[in-house]
Image 1: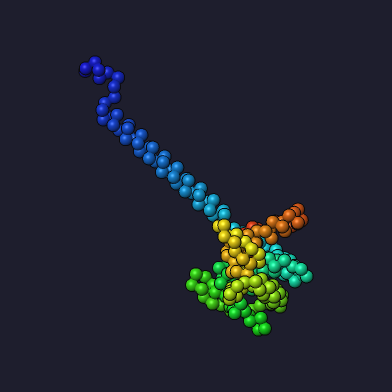
Image 2: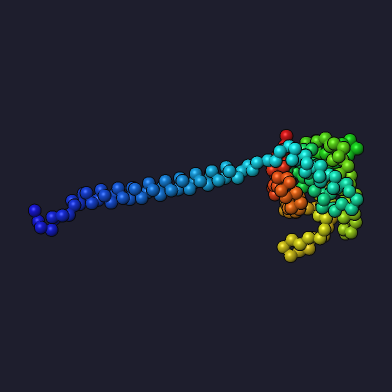
Length: 218
């Protein structure tokens, strides 16, 4: 045997070892990817859907907002938010359906509202209890005052902005149809104020209105 072959593995063995090493690396990468995917899926399942509040808590929110909306000197934003909660309570509608609601969709004498649900905008008629009708009548008076300074026709949308806002550097006047983001921020302001007021005495309210709305989703 040639002297340079002593202590050196045969060529076939060397190739096999390299193949096994590459296979092991590939398996490790696949395992790591599967672990990462599983972790992401577990995390997603832990976040969505977020747990809903109890039925008693949802009703407490409604009672608090509806009472505040009927007080003398109630802020327009409070009255509007009471309308949002009252309509969600009556219909289970999401923000999209509430934003599409118009004044002409209301029949307060009969105690009905017609809302469009889902991406196909299926119209459904929902009954309104006396408390929700009272809040809606209060909002219609506030809404009329908000629209008094508008030039041109008054929008038919039920939910309007209650003060001048700024969107990408553009000033948006009060009395114009509110956006989904406007409703999100309005709910969060209410939650932060309420949680600060009742800290240590009540469970904190969720910053996502969806966790309340789903209690009334029928």
